[in-house]
Figure 1 (cartoon, helix red, strand yellow):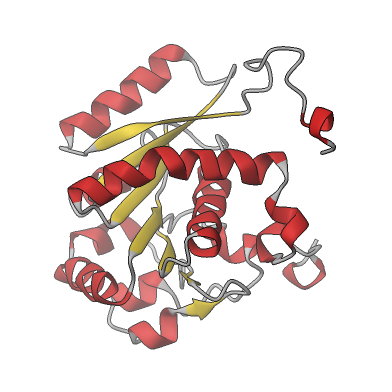
Figure 2: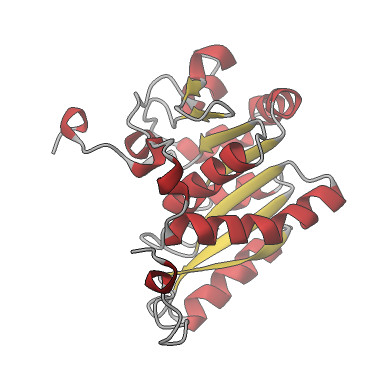
Length: 232
């Protein structure tokens, strides 16, 4: 399926009923737990990652960004820092280029990289042009300079980073972040894999704020159903 024929993403919706779905409610709960930690410590730059591919880090970072921007009217920017397997541009149905990689190579301005969304307080920086050695871009001074500029313009910066174990990109990014969230796929991510990813982050001096358990369908008791309150 080409990008032009993709169905409309729920991330693009501004309908009130779409902010009362089970996913939207869980995202608000996640931010309710995060907000005091961010506020009390003056944290503005948050990285979302996972141990391996396919654990839901991009959908988590995207939905969290929408939640923060929509419900708290907080100036938020979502940055696709997964330069090897980017997906944010597809989720928000926008061009991938120019974006972060172009910005870090000095090939575009910040204004050219930023994209508007239907949510008035949320902007997105997609991954940009594919490059041969993306990890090297995170070792340049331009990364620190870009984050400094974004700190001035936005209240919350969310970076969707690559998974920890397959590549070293995330550990290079970690030093620029105020805090890190790691997404784990409930029931599928092996314990030793999650523990290894955690240790890699800690060894890189990442400030690990917590873990988001994704796909936790068996965690809630059988009587806890959204349909009880009229939700489907």
